[in-house]
Length: 198
Image 1 (tube, one colour):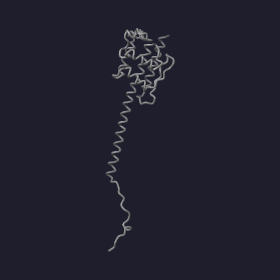
Image 2 (cartoon, one colour; image 1 turned 135 degrees about the vertical axis):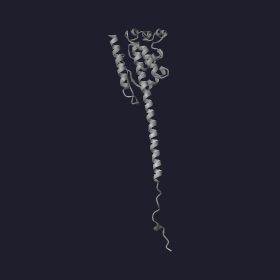
Image 3 (cartoon, helix red, strand yellow; image 1 turned 180 degrees about the horizontal axis):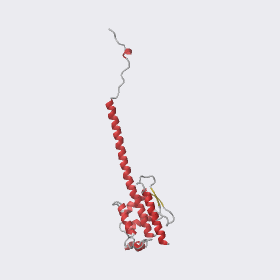
Image 4 (cartoon, one colour; image 1 turned 180 degrees about the vertical axis):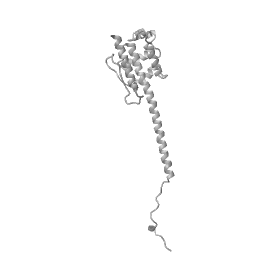
């Protein structure tokens, strides 16, 4: 009887992963990666939509301030105080606000186009801008919405009240062209104000 020595049996078989197990594991990783990417993409898109509205909110608030004061705000505090004082939903403050002695309050007291930084035959800018502010606040009090927006939107406040503030996304996701749109709108407002003071 020939006994086989341990050395004659050859190397021990190496355990292998079956093809089926490998494909299941690989497929699970792919699906998990796709789901994660989808969740991230949805979150970025939602943030971009919200941030786009916040940039527009800041732009409209600045324009409303400029229309009321014939000058642009030079600090976020001035803009916040203006929005808080007017309530932002109505186009102009109440008579009490107009009598409060705040700069520009008297100019806001009437919704007449000729008396609110505009010219006759044009829709009252204060009322139109007030409606835009309310719409962009999406149900939140406009003052709170503006503060949240100013905390995220980068704004450069110039010392010259005749120059509009510069808005920037600061690297945050935002819909294409919105910063340019707001910048051009404020530039048009500056031209209108300059023409009115000549």
